[in-house]
Length: 374
Image (cartoon, rainbow, N blue to C red):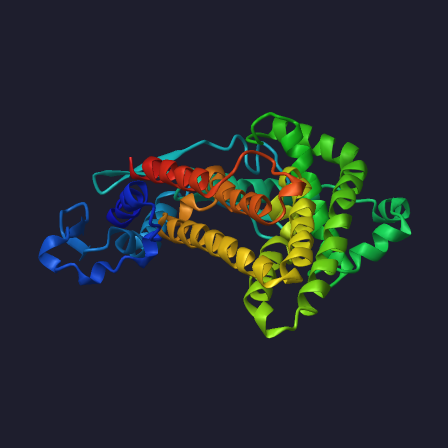
């Protein structure tokens, strides 16, 4: 946990005042009171020096990747279109190589390159897991003929109409997003902890080929009400033209853009996707209540301020994390906790998926801080 996170935590605990970590101005602290970090090479020569360790890490990240890439050249491969013992074999969990008297550790991943995949060594386990999920998905799709005519014939006219109202730029792009989410759900449903060798890939491929039609239909059934509701929310928001509703309108636009965008289906994933329609219904509930009276608007503004403070601290926390940590499950969960907080504040009759409050979210942030700082 860095100094600003600790200052924010202690101030909040002792006074109840919330100051997002990003609001502290460390530039006003005299240099002689700040720690100086020095990065040295294998010969103990200075490579970089500064007061901001995070900035140093980010600045040196390309050099670290280049060093790892050079060390891992023997195991990296490109142009792979299927998983065999010859093309990939068993994907190692980690890769270690001694360079200049030091041990470099990397994490081999299957990386998506659209028409093929590559085995590349990445800097962290989190990056490996995110990349390999997409890479395995790409390999499965490259080896599966998706029966689109059959799938489209199973869709109702209502579903087809709803799919036309999408942020993807067209139905084909939306269906590719749906397909990606369906494949992810099939692989996750196997419960084997991922694909790391030819046998596991063959089993996953058999599952995808067998289940792809019902899996795509299942995702479409979840996505249809989301797109319908998103359209209703969008129309309702744009009809809020009164000057006094400008801040509310801006907040709702931001929330809608965060929930429904090009790629949201696979990004969100089927389990969490099931909650998105409720978030959108919560937005409609809020829109229906807020303009009723000045008192309702004032109450909405107060609650909006509470959400904004939580969201600002979440964004600042994520920005302070190393890049490889930002896609971890505990970090991503914070985003959905904020959506549940919105339901609890603006649409209580809809109910939340679990108990939630600003205090609980701050506690989750503190726990994440503690893990990252340990």
